[in-house]
Amino acid sequence: MLMIEQAEIDLIKKRWADFFDRYDYESDINRLRERYPDERSLYISYKDLSSFDIDFADNIRKDPVTYLSVGEDYLKTYIGRTREKISRLNIRLKDIPERNFKYEIRNVRSTNVDTFISVTGIIRKNTEVLPRLDIAVFRCPNCGSIISETEYYRKMNEPAKCDSCNYHGKFILEIDQSTFIDTQKLEIQENPDTLDGTSQPQRMTVIMEDDITGKIFPGDRVTIYGILKADQKFIGSIKLTEFNIFLYANNFKKETKDFEDIRITDEDEENIKKLSSCPDIIDRLSRSIAPSIYGLEVIKKALVLQLFGGVRKVLKDGTTIRGDIHILMVGDPGTAKSQLLRYMTSLAPRSVFAFGKGSSAAGLTAAAVRDDFGEGRWTLEAGALVLADNGFAAIDELDKMDQRDTASMHEAMEQQSVTISKAGIMATLKSRCSILAAANPKFGRYDVTRTIAEQIDFPPPLLSRFDIIFKLVDTPNKDNDSRLAEHILMTHRIGEIYRSIENTNINIDIPDEEKYIPEIDKDLIRKYISYAKNRIFPRLSDEAIRILREEYVNTRSSGVDSIPITARQLESTIRLAEAAARARLSSIVTEADALLAKSIVDYYLKDVSAI
Ligand code: ADP
Ligand code: MG
Image 1 (tube, rainbow, N blue to C red):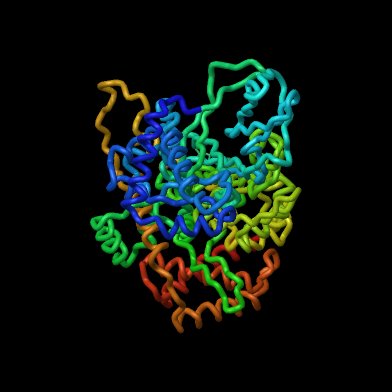
Image 2 (image 1 turned 120 degrees about the vertical axis):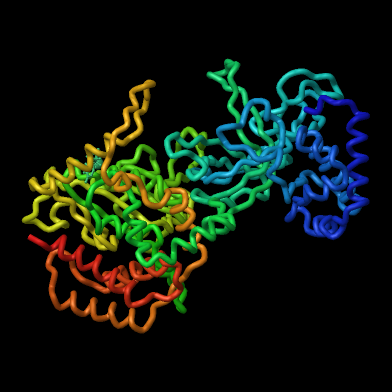
C-alpha cells in the first residue's frame, strides 16, 4: 500500500521519534504496554502535533494513511521492547481543530479522498459489530511455509507467490492463526439545523473499527474524525469507474450539550432578554407563528408553549418524568394542519418532519432490519422520533401509522426511549422529543357527534399520551369564511412572487400589513427557544400549585366523557405552566402561568367533549 520510498518512511519515523521525545506521552505509552491487548489505542493531541511541527501536522492531515501507519509501526517497536508481539496498535487523533478539517457532508469531494477530515451529523443507522480478518495467515500448499498479510477494509490481500518455493496460485487461509478485528458500519446524516429546510439531508457511510466500535447508536449527534476513502463500485466482478466514498473513522466525539448548534452572541442575548421582559411575550410569540394561517389562536399559543416545553425531572427512585409536550390535531381536510406542521418544523430547533406511514423500514420509532446497507448484517435504523431526540418531531397523517409502530409509540412518547431486541441486537435508543401530530378522521370528515377516540383508529392509551388534542372542524360560517378568505387573499397579494419579472411590482397599499408578517423574526425565536431551554428550569410556586390542584379536582368532578381525566392531565397542565414560565425566562411558575395552562386545557377539554 505504501508507494513511497523507504528513505521517506525512515524520515517520517524519525519525526515521530522526535515527537515522542519532546512531548510527554510516556505514561499513556506505559499504560498501553501494561494493558495491551485490552487497550490498543494511543490518543495524540493534534494541538501537540501542530506545536511540535506545523508541517508535520499538516502532512498527517494530507496523507494520514502513510503518516499514521508509520507512527503506529514506530510505536509497535517502541512498546515491543518489553513485549513479544504487537499485531495492532492505533494512533487516534484528538483536539482536532475545525479549520481545514471540518466539512459539511454535502461538500465532501473526491479531492478530499485519502485526507483526514471531520463531519458532524446525526447517526441514522448502525450495523451490528462483527469481526473481519485483520491479519490473514496463509500456508503455501506446496512447501508449507507461512505468509502473513495485513488486510484492509474490504480488500483481501492474497500472497502473489511463495517466497520460499516460488509457488504461484491459491494459498490456504489458516483461520486459527489469523487475527480478527471488530468492524461496524454507520450512516451519518447532516444535521437538519445546518440545512435551509428545503433540501434533503445528505448521508455518508462511516466505518468504525477495533476499540471504537459499538459506542455510537442511531440518534446520537456526533462528530466523526477520519480518513475519507473511495471504494470502487462493482457490478458482479466488473469494476466500474464510479466510486463510493466512506469515512474510515479514527476518532469521534459525541455531542453532550442539548442545543449547542445554535450560536447565541452577546447581542442576541441582549435582544432575548429585552423580548422576555415584554408583558405579552407569549401573545407576541404566538402571533409570530405562521402569520399566513388565519385564526387558531389557542392552538398557536399551545404551540408556543410546546416549543419551550416543561421541565424533565428525575425522581428520587430514578424514574424520569418527561417535560416535552405532545400535541395532536385531528380534523377536517383543508384546515391548515399540514401547513402548521411544516411551519413548526422550520421554526423548532432540531426538528424532524415525517409522515405516519414512513418511507423507511424504521418507521416512526426504530427497527432492526437486514438490508443492503448492512451487507447481510443486521442494521439498526432510527426513525423520526429517535432522530428528533432532544428536539421536535412533526408527524403528519398519524392515522396512517404502521401497526408495527403503534406498540413502540407508547414507550417512545412516555419513557421517551425505543427498545429494540432482535437477533442479537439489544439497544435502547432515546426519543426525548416533543411531538406535534396531525390526523385525519376515520370517516373523512370530523363528526361532531362522535368522540375523538371513535374517529381515529388509535388505541386509547396512545391517545392519552398526548397532552392536548385539538379538533379542527371546517363548518361553513359566513363571517368567519369571509375573514379567512380575506386573510388568504392578502397573504397571496403580499407574498413575494417567485419569478418576479421586472416592472410587475406595482405598489399596492395593504392595510395592516404587519398582520401578515411575523412580529418577531424567526431566527430570533429559534435563538430565544434554545436560550430558554438551556438555561431556564422553572419550579412551581405555592400559588401555581393551588391553581393546578383546583383545576384537576374540578375537571375530574365535571366528568368529561370522551376523555378520561386521569393524573396524566394534571401532569400535562404542569408542563404547560412550566413552559409558560420558561417563555418568560422566569425560574418560578407563577399564578399567571398556571392560569394560562388552565385556560388551554379547559379549551381543549371543552373542545373535544363539545357535542
Ligand atoms: P390539512 O393538512 O388540514 O388537510 P393543509 O394544511 O394542506 O390542510 O391546508 C390546505 C390549504 O388551505 C393550505 O394552502 C392552507 O394554507 C389553506 N388554509 C386552510 N386553513 C387556513 C387558515 N386558517 N388560514 C390560512 N390558510 C388556510
Ligand atoms: Mg394534510
